[in-house]
Image (cartoon, rainbow, N blue to C red; front, side, top):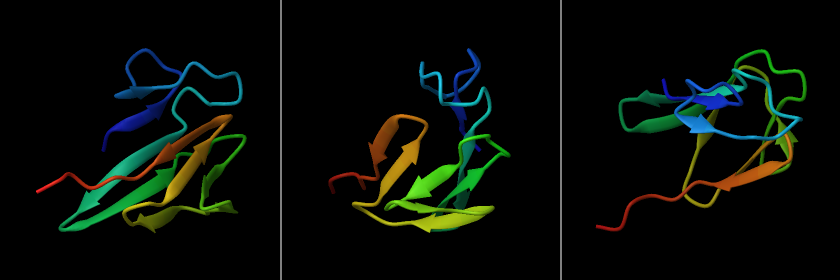
Length: 77
């Protein structure tokens, strides 16, 4: 589970005051990709909706963590 957060040991490091040290994780479940909120103070939003626990991700989804927005992209074949 690649962690996302402000911590130096995060795989995706976001230097943002609204991002927790261990804010979220990406979870690979077979062919499915999910994001999991790790108890962050400001929450994780997928397409402008706050998630609780885990949420499935699809190509083009927008993830907001703190003040940062990331877009889910699948690799080109």
